[in-house]
Image (tube, rainbow, N blue to C red; front, side, top):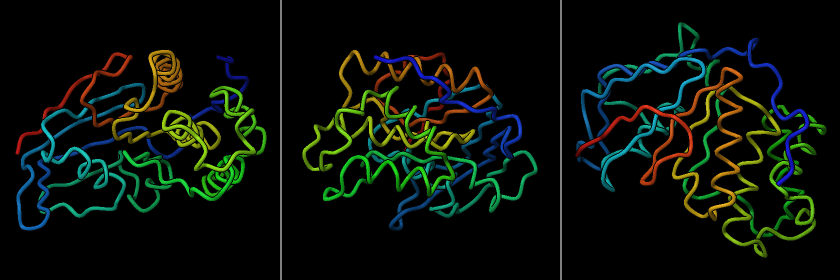
Length: 213
């Protein structure tokens, strides 16, 4: 596993330095998933969302990203307008969201440009996640673990302070779980934040918030 060259530019000039969730409730399909959920997350901190399937972990991540509306409560970003703050986060869902017919290079280039990253950042991300030998393969030819590494590479190619991760480690083998743990630690050490829905613990120090239906 290659060490990153300059994966993380300074996050000090980015907008988000805090995430607050206050007394949040979400209802989907007529069913109340949860209510009264509160969380404060500061720069350098990580929190895992736990709970059974259907408890609303993914819905809460999507609400923070502005894709799901709260029934009650508020989500704040340290006084930054949410419309601006949400340009400073990455959401990597349980599904990788990759186009199967594109090559890995095309996908990484697209997401790097969409996220405001640089060619240098893209190269460093590909090296750090050992994607260079895979870049000319179509996404459909990649294994599940390789596709997850490609999806995660977009966060390194276009650095943003807040990472919202839905079961990020599920397709990764033990080596790459440790490897991505090291990447998460560097992100947190640089002032980033992580909110992750998990069933298995993350390989970094985190707080935990349990959701119950």
